[in-house]
Image 1 (cartoon, one colour):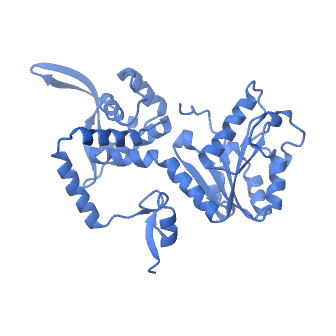
Image 2 (tube, helix red, strand yellow):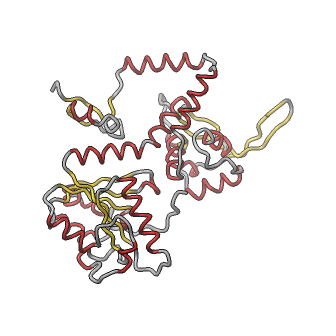
Image 3 (cartoon, one colour):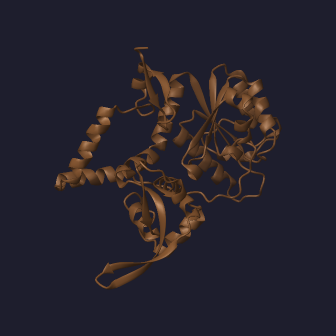
Length: 349
């Protein structure tokens, strides 16, 4: 057991055993648990930091750190808010969360540190945005309170009593959120080192569209840039429920106008049939691949080299979901996640 250590990928609550060589080879992917001594030392350093005023060089360093953990899209902002601000009903004692009076302006003030998305947003506009995103803490009804601000002056505010994460942990939360893509890249590179070929697949519906080629090319580019795929196959006009074997049976002129593609669905099926290496298929959203559970199951049964299917939900949930072959063949609940056609969701800007 000397060559093995306990670490985790994303959640500290899900420990795994990994050999040292693999951990050293992918330091951005595998995270080590901190010892009690490390945690105590960090607490001491944090206490010291609170009593130190920053000089110019230190201020520049802080600014650099804040730039590094800037939250870019709305899915990441929602994740940050939902992590830091929880409904009062979820509060537990002896935790990093404290019951706090919170207004929408309070939340907005914290977000200004981590994103430029709301630099020109009014309090009313931010409140409307919170409702549109269906933020978790909105289930807590606000109370109107009169607060003293200076001398005899008062101000009426809509306040919620929420379970709020201590501010000393906010930077760490932001870092974890914005590191989704670097962790994803590290995972993809590890798959390639393990002998996987990573293939992208994208699909556009039959609905009439004036910019079909433009939208397909955008998806193709995302697959190459975000998931580092080695090839991309495209179904330019098909239904998400349509069996893969029934797609793209006729020639499509649109394929010639797309860059960096390797064929349509029929070419994809031929390719995976002929390849002997392990394959990971990547698609943007479940409907970007298939929402037909039985057809997906048949695909995995017929092509044993398709070992993983990866669904990119980055725009919606700041997350990339990975399914193992056996997981989809043996677990109905996991397979059911593909049996969907979500209502329209506004993509992050």
